[in-house]
Image (tube, rainbow, N blue to C red; front, side, top):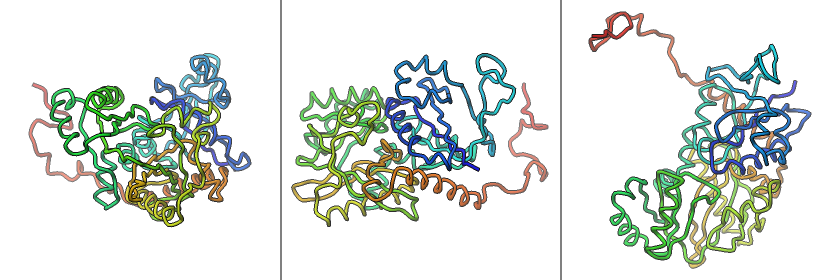
Length: 400
């Protein structure tokens, strides 16, 4: 019997389109003789759809028409119910007696950015209890938030550049104080970032106070939490993917993205067109760096993955200061663009094998999780003795 694998993509995120590209690449990589792959597209409004129309990238040029030609679906937030249900089982074009589209066996989220990569969607999957690939709720949230991530890494002696963080409300109330702190601690130039977005959305360089204010004003449009980082003068960016779980993982070969500016922009990452995805951006694979530096980066990437309790496939981006060859972790992408398949192909693991391994990891974690105790076979309401705190009688709070 084939394994029913649901691939979730799209979502309420500024990285919506990038998620579509990554997901269609992953769907095409599955071994169709082993898996029945069900695409589940989440619209920008949060509605879920499935159907064969979702498999053609050209159809996304008109998302309203695409939704009309697809079937709206949902899952119940009930533990152990892995069914995918029709939203409208008894009416309209898709009128059918059976409300269930398919029973799902494994879920693979390929959602980038907010409301998908930040733990929110993972929390839903954990509530349902379905096996799923990738980081759990906590590690997704920690990996997505650049501030929390850097705090955890620094606590575990993994080097990160100096930074200052604050909220959008603090920026509105204490602007002069924040500017002074940035200038005294970091100096110029700096990089301004939304704390919880990827794909270089909202990121900007500032070399003076006027540019700093402009970049922060732009970044706060995308996030409530903001981070300003010291910018390395002569910097080389290196990426490395990690695959497995926090107890058993492996690191890929390293890549060096090629940027025309100070950092890799959204356009440079995804300018290769709708079918290309992250692997189309210009890069050197393997990175043209000494073997000892490559090994140090691969080790640091693995340790970052472990410390953050990651799972599945992630990509760790580091910065190398060419002045002294010091290496700093920039960020981790817990659901990387194109699932970093191009790095694993260069490491001897095909895209098809990568998807096999993600399914296996999902099932392994489910088996391990099911061995843990989450409830006790006891009912405190049947133990007697009443409930402290007056006003509750017969299970209903007294109204006055």
